[in-house]
Image (tube, rainbow over all chains, first blue to last red; front, side, top):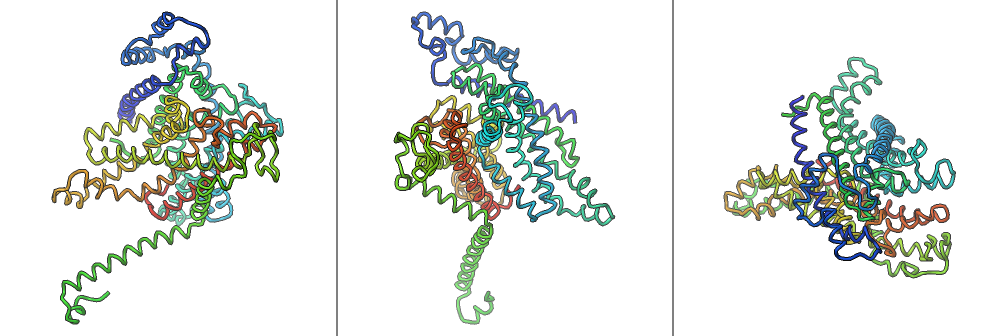
Length: 307
Length: 308
């Protein structure tokens, strides 16, 4: 077990390294000159532009700048925001907890809605409940996230004024964006739970369990659920990752501070140190979440052996 | 089926009779296989509905000029008019007819969807095939590359690429296409990994086929069914992603009648003109739903292995 975890950790190092190369090289080619943007409108001489370049280290060759950036990043120094003139790390650390809160709330909503819905649909296959939940989830996964967000905002904040239109930090600012992402994600989880449950329900060991006289409730909850939920766990992990990406849209719709909103604003302002930092953080978080999910997976399913 | 003995009794040459029979069997089998797929597909009501809706939207896109009551870019005097008999979907803050913009938007969204998926198939198949077929170091590099791409959660890979290339519709197609590469590459790679060990591939090698011929003529055809299903399912995803990027201001720029972009304009008028976000979102939802239903139906009919 420990060996596997160590191996898995070791294998994610090159991935993270690749991510840093990709993030750095992509944003190296961002359109627009950050120095010109910094002095937008102001009349500056070529000498001053050169001095600013030197101060920002933009005059060095790419690979030197990459290595320097990577070295600093490992020490938690992600550079200075061009637009806000503040350390990127500080900007990110201020808003990241907000995104984590949103993601956790959303995944709880998604699991609480999706798993029971999928299980009931599978147990009562071909009933009106099954049809209803399948129609609902099929439509749900086809809806753009920003549109669900706008509809939610329109209904709860504009029509009924139950919630503030623009974000805020407290509980009230968390509910609408969390519901938006959670409901959308619950559609996928419900569909997967249903198909996974249907697969398990066909298996012989359930007939055995029934034959030895176990109550239907015990057969379903103790015997079927346990195996059916293993594949669902992977998707929950993937959904957490999806939410880190989805936060870009939801935070933008609800004007909620977070890593996603920070990224969008930074892209619009050509503030590439911030974009680099935010995307790097999202990728590293995602890789770590997948690692944890893989380890849980092995712990839960004794049939799986990793060599 | 006639037995060999009967043929001989009829005084025919055994070789000819054998040839005929084999040929007949082959055609019979091909027809029945296709009809099984077709019958399964027809039985799936959702898939038929999806196909019809998608065809309808494609036609809307192609014939937008003839269907649209107004020029989608023409500024009118009715600003933010509510849906009425003159403007069935109302007008936007510049007085442009929403229905006309939605119809032209179908052309843009579907084009983006198809091209993005085309890019993903082209790049994904090439990468996947190289990794799966050649194995060894090539495969290690491919897997590494895919792992890195998959480390960007959800929309973030496409978002980063779109941000790098700059906001335009063309760049969104490239970004969404590349963002979708791992999906195709992984399926092709695993299929190539299995097929290259099969006896018929070894036989092809023995009679002197080159790598190119083996890949194109022998290994690739095995993946076509999976590719069709994946491509259909991914069109929906591509349209969603492209609309989301445009919504964030990274894609089509105003005044292009792109659905995500239109919804983004509507944000500021949420309290006064909810139809500005209602109709574009509905259009995206129906198109994506159609592609998903069709994809699900094709998957069930063509490729039971891909079933979730």
